[in-house]
Image (tube, rainbow, N blue to C red; front, side, top):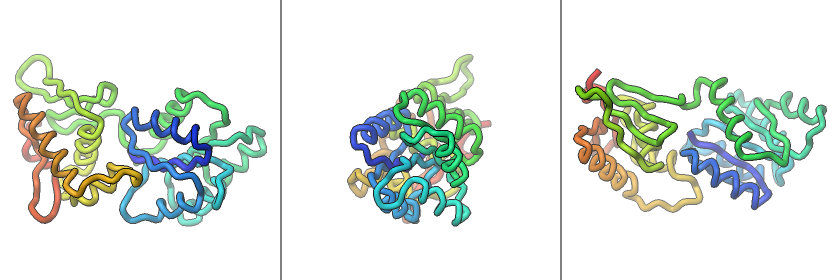
Length: 234
């Protein structure tokens, strides 16, 4: 899941981003509303949820909500604000926010509200993802591969390996260009080398092979990568 975080309080923004990244989210963090809108208009990335502070410089979180809804964009929005009065909560929800979190808050509540948005929004990634014998274990950051044995093979994954595999499984049998994967799974503030996707794919294939599992991810020369469901058992 890729999240756009717009928060101008540096300490809070950094803390929220670190917590979200530790939970396997890809996070773009900006400190003003104008930059947030530029990111939302980018053709390179597809956000699955946005977290907006109400009192942003440039465009406010409220204005960002209103713009998205005017453009018929259903992106789920969690609003952060120190304005806890009921009239402000009503105003934010009427502007298009899906949920409202009053500062100060604990990170556990933020994560719980994101999970609630996920349950209410079918376009967000599910808590589990299974294709044939391949099943992603979100809780333990692992891939479970069923075989002839009584128990499945459990393959621990790095956060980036997990994100790549989840993204390709969600787009099964589609060819995804390497540039699309790079822009979707690395945040804008990172400067990944041009062949970082190919390098990660080699590492992922090598890891699966070390556990005796064939990798269903194909490299399509000149086009990209594909999770080929015909290469796995059902």
